[in-house]
Amino acid sequence: MSRLKQITEAVRDAGSLGVADLASLTGASEMTIRRDLEVLAAQGVLERYRGGARSLLLRGSEPPFALRSDENTTAKRRIAAAVAALIADGESVVLDSGTTCLEVARLLHDRRLTVMPLSLHAVNALSSSSTLTLLVPGGRPRLGELALTGPLTLASLQSLRFDTAVIGCCGLSAEHGLTAFDLEDAAVKRAAITSARRVIAAVDASKLTRTALAHVAPVSSLDAVVTDAESAEGLTAAGVAVVTA
Image (cartoon, rainbow, N blue to C red; front, side, top):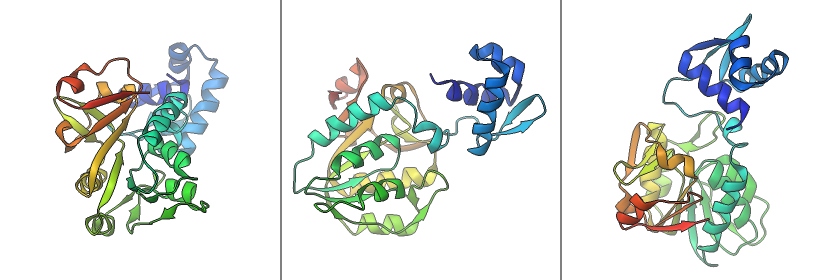
């Protein structure tokens, strides 16, 4: 676990913590902790006060995109490569928001595909492609995340039919299915799943032990799960094809 994530989770769980406590927890110097707190404050994760910081995140909420983008990058790139290998040239693809799906977008840049990304991060990553047909949905971008949500996004998805949906998630289990932290994001994911003939979930191992607030869909709605987890027996037993990246 990265130090910034460790600090974020510790402050969120405690509500507030002092610099000395965080230094003891992480093994870093107090000067380093102060610099880390400045970075996290700039990202809207926490609020500084003299000698410590208090969390601006609710329990059970997702850390900001900027913080997550630096986590598990090697695993996310392996997952993205495996997802891209499952997509054939000529397909139409709806691509979910999130850091793993952004890695997928980067790998699709030079492919002959039709792609509708559901985040402005991925739109930007694909906008310079000369081979790909880029469809941009309507909607309202969430601050920082830049995921597109709301009735215009849902209308865009409802009016189209895709060969493949690539879906990210905040949690996945055989018992609780696919889950998300944000209610509007969950609605967009459901619409994307409904709009596609085939559904691939791109899920790093940490998500297989987590259940978020909003239910998106049961595992039966997924055709394949691409993950770096060494074992996903529960999903396999539920009849989902698991691809290990």
